[in-house]
Length: 130
Image (tube, rainbow, N blue to C red; front, side, top):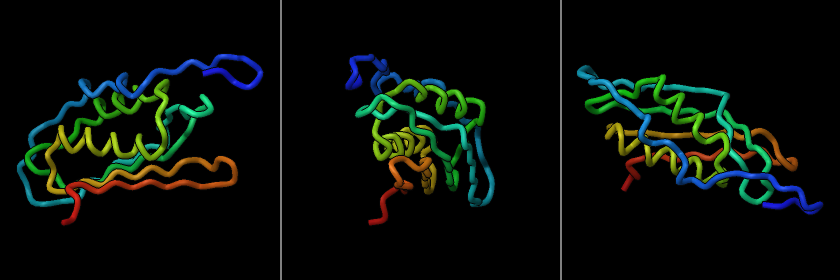
């Protein structure tokens, strides 16, 4: 992508998110909600090429497995040079984690730093209440 003055701001597409690094470990216990939060999530706005920073919160009730946190860190870090809209990033994280974990329920929330005077919070819950 080129800026108005012709500079190039390189980034890659969402296909470069490294889902393969996600690992789980077995869970055999009562239903409990697990909440994991980091303020180190960043991706790139595909419109401007500028970085977006967010607090990422993952809340889930495990089925038969839990997410291994180091692998989650590697997965989250793989977004750093990915051009993806805020809403799509939140949805992709939720879908990827739901696929890997098969939890009883999962909510992913992103609260992005203010940009252009707007604070944006996105939230995806799976499975979708039906």
